[in-house]
Image (cartoon, rainbow, N blue to C red; front, side, top):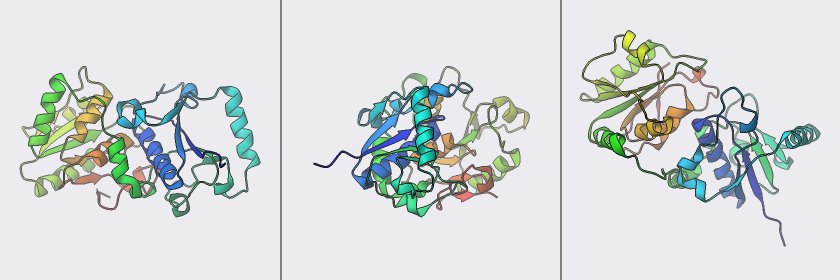
Length: 285
C-alpha cells in the first residue's frame, strides 16, 4: 500500500504573499495527486516585526485543506539541519524545498511532480507556476462572506461604472512608486475608456491629495472602519486596475472578472521577482 503524498506549504507574509504560496502549492498538489497542507504557524510565530497572521480563511479554499499549526524552535532547528544535509541533491529528491535564487520562473519547478512528500517555503511569485490550474484557483478563491452595509453599496457602483482600481502602497514599503507612474497609467486608461472613474485605494491618502490629483473622476476610498480584506474584496469588483508593485493589488487584479479587464503594472525591476507580471498585462517602464 503506497503512502499518502503530502505537499506542505510554510505560509508567510501578508495576504498577497500567502495567495502566491497557496497557488503554487495547490498547482503542485493537483499535478502530483498529493494532499495539500497549509502550515499556518511556523513562520508567523517568528514574525515579530509585522505580526502577520493566516489570512486565507476569508476564502472558500480554507474549508477544503488541512492546516498545521506550525512547529516550535525545535522544529525550525530540525528543518535547517535537514536542509543542510540535503544540499547538493536535486530539488525533486529533497524533503524541504526552498524557492530557488535568484528569484524568477524555473520551468523545472513548474513541471515538478512529487514522488515523495515535501515541505515548501518561499514566495513563488510567478503566475506561470499555476496557469494550468487557473479555473480551479478561481473556484478556490471565492470569498466566504459577501460584503455588507456601506461596502455592499459600493460594489454596485464599482460594477456598474467603468471603474479603475488604483492602488498606492507607501507607508510600510521599500520601493515607492512615483506620481509619474500613476499619471502615465491614468492617462492610458483615459484614452482607452473615456468615461473611466478612478477609485483610489491607499494607505497614504494625504500624499495623493498633496499631489493635486482631484476632480470628479477620482474617488478616494477612505478605509474608515473597513478592514484591509474588505478593501481587497472591493478592489476585485473593479473592472480595470492600476496596481502598485504589491502582491496585494496583484491578486485583486488577477481575481477581477471583467471580460474586458485592463491591468497596468509598474516596471518589472520594481518587483522582487521579475517574472511576476502576466504577459497579458501592460507594463509601464
